[in-house]
Structures are given as structure tokens and as C-alpha cells.
Length: 257
Image 1: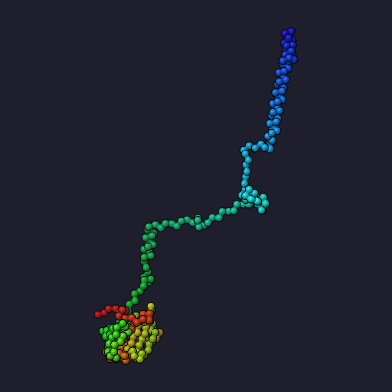
Image 2: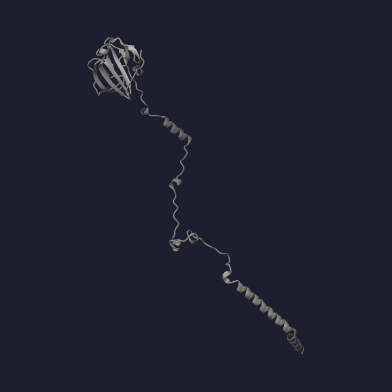
């Protein structure tokens, strides 16, 4: 009995005030659904930015850098070129020479083999005797035979007639002839532009033209064939020239006593 009264009261409430409450709830539900539907239609799915943002991948030489004349497929076929290394850059640095090695190198460079050292040229007197007339090309000297003042292109060395006349140094005989004024003459080329001339020899020389001679080789003997110096005692007339210019023979003869 009591339960029936409760149900009756509940029915009266629903038919009375409860009706309006239920109606309000329905209207609110419809309004919220409509608001959500309108908001969803304003933001299309296409406008929604994907999570993580827009990721853009640019390949080398792609359309982002300009059109590819060979087509898009060529981008996939391109292979990176092998890096060429320069052999010169990979070479190891030269080792630094240690002080002991450097000193040994300097000592080796300082040592000159005997055969590489310049050989000193030694000349000898063709005859030994007193110098009667000196070399004089810049000042005039009295000629005892002709009795006038003139230059003298060589030196006159006193020697006994018949004494052997020796080559001053090694060389080659270039001429053997009879000069009208200086008599029998022998010319020797010693190289390096030096030439020696031996005059007033005996008519028969001891060497021939083209013959190779050494220091002290006998060229002939002191004679009296030089007419231009016949007024003097027996002697050898010696001349020297360097590169075609007359020079003093005494510059090449060693001192002797």
C-alpha cells in the first residue's frame, strides 16, 4: 500500500514539474550536440596540421633547387663520386736529420777526393843563366845589336851555345820554323791560353810540330841563328803570351839561385 502511494506521487511529479525538467535536459543536450557539430564542420580534416609539423626532404639537385632535365628518376640513380685522395698529401714528412748524421754529411762533403783537387801547374826554366834583357813592352829599351830604342817582347837568358833548351811545361808543339830575324823557333801550346816561344836555337830542333811534350822535354839547343840579336853573347830568347797577348815570362818562371 505504501509503495503504491510512492509511485503515485512520483507520477504526479513527472506529470507536473518533472515534465519541465526533463524537457530542459533534452533541449540542453540537443544544443550541445549542435554546437559540437557546427564547430567540427568549420575545421575540415584537410586543414588539420599533422602531428610533428610539415616535414620537407630536399634531395641534392632536386626540384627545390631547380628542374631536373634528366627526370626525377635520375635522382635515385645518382651515386656519390668516390673521393680521390692526393698521394702527395699522404706522404709522410721527411725525417729530420739528427745532429750526428748532419755532422757526418758535412764532413763527407768537406772531404774532396785527391783526383778532384786542382793540380798546380809547375813550370821550369828552359835554361838557367843570367837575364841579359828583360821583358819591356811599355818602355823602350836599347837594342845592343841594332843600336836603337825599342820594345822587347821576351827575355834573353844567357846560356852556353849547345846547351839543351827544355819545355817550360807540358803541352803540344804547334810550330817549328826558321824566323828571318829570330832564327830557329819552337812554339808550344800549354793550354788555358798560355803559349811559349823559344828562339835563337840551333838549326835542327829536337821536336816536331804536333808532338806532345812534358815539363823538361828537350826542344833543341842554344844556337846563334837570331840575326836580330847577333850582337849579344849566346842566349835563349823566350817569349810568352796569354790569350793572344804578350806577357812577361818571368811571371811563370820559379825563383832559383
